[in-house]
Length: 101
Image (tube, rainbow, N blue to C red):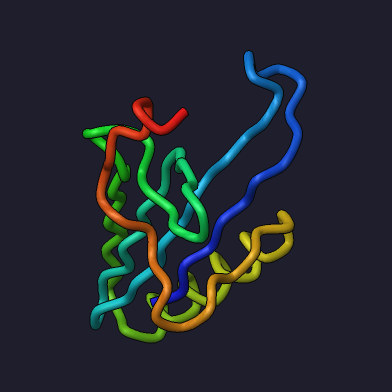
């Protein structure tokens, strides 16, 4: 279950920084793609809202088609300069970090 993050400058955002996370998982003929904004707090990553991550299940007729989509989605995300988190690291559930900042 690869987990990817991207924290980069983005002038159109109010704060000037964009932070996004992706989690991709495949079970048989279904590929689950979770994505959304993230917050970070000293080596830990949290989904930025209570209703995040957005979950998009993609259903396929065959396992081969699901594998093909899974691999292409990973290549697409890696091509957009996302960083893969090491094994064991994951994006945690929403935590209000406003008291820290």
